Length: 446
Ligand SMILES: Cc1ncc(COP(=O)(O)O)c(C=O)c1O
Image (cartoon, rainbow, N blue to C red; front, top):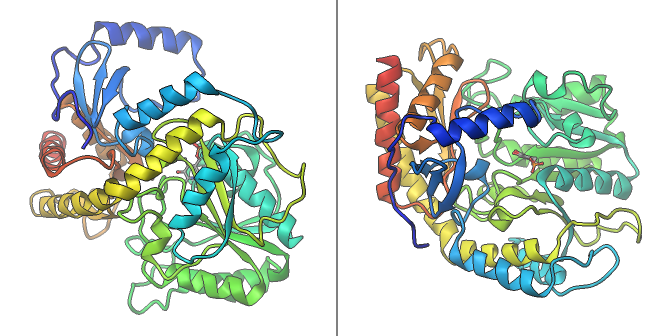
């Protein structure tokens, strides 16, 4: 494990403390008001799973910069790789010149693919760029223009990816018209079935809806370039589809010559206890979008596609900064660390933590559901377990109470708390987070 300044939190001032208040005041004057800050954390430094704020308070980070700091904050091996690279070459632009890091990372990522086939990588700077590239490539390769995406999906906020995003109205309001050709279908959320059916007897009707309804009413299947799906839904509420859902999409896609794009931006890079979340399912995407955890916090987006699909011509797509040597050096080290130990740790500690959270259901009736894979865990907060009425305000209050007690978590979807720590956390830290979570629920809900 990475050396850590501390393993558990320590709160020494009121929150926010005096220095934090100054930064927040200045931020509210000068910085874009479009950011959503759930609570007043002003970060100063981080090491392992601990973040120190500007007033010297230590927090246990069970959010990891929104599922980004996969190897923990400032993992010494990653820092060393960044420093070493920054001393020799920061930028050259892979759009026009060669450097070793591009093929090196691409080769390592191909080696992680379970199918043993040939893959190629396009490099951008973020998740949204990885999705934009996936959309453009799917259109280019198929000569078709339409996409099927899913309700509650989050794929990013640039115009193309925003057209796929269907997570919260505020993310789309005021920005239309968006990119045409996107139709949203039902994601398999068995806790809140969009078709009011029950898993086991539903025949995955959410997937067949695409063929039975969409293809018979609004969408010509031979105009669909790709179905784009989060292997495990992230911002929508940490929703794990049942085993049949993704294979059912694959069957539809193969029948109609439609490509499959797996958005692994949040659920990929070990988060679910396997390197890629789609590996939990009998699912074989053609294009994969990767970002967040791939470079431990350095900005990098990767669009991977099977070689015969990434067939665009020189000049068709590129980005000046995409895949700069420093970010790629961080990613190469991150992939090594994940592969060697932290993906396995995510599976192990994730199981431990899920069991701990499930036990809390006996004590706290406001917990409607505990779900997830590896260290991608969601806890849904409800007013009533039978009606499943969402308790959004209570969810937000619990998140705030966790912060006051030194544990950082965030919301996902209308009523879920997402737990996405660095993949380095141990069982002691997971237990501390579970106990703090329980105390926070008691303080808020009684
Ligand atoms: C599944 C998924 N796709 C795409 C994105 C967009 O990534 P970025 O914010 O790096 O543009 C996100 C971000 O949260 C995401 O969760």
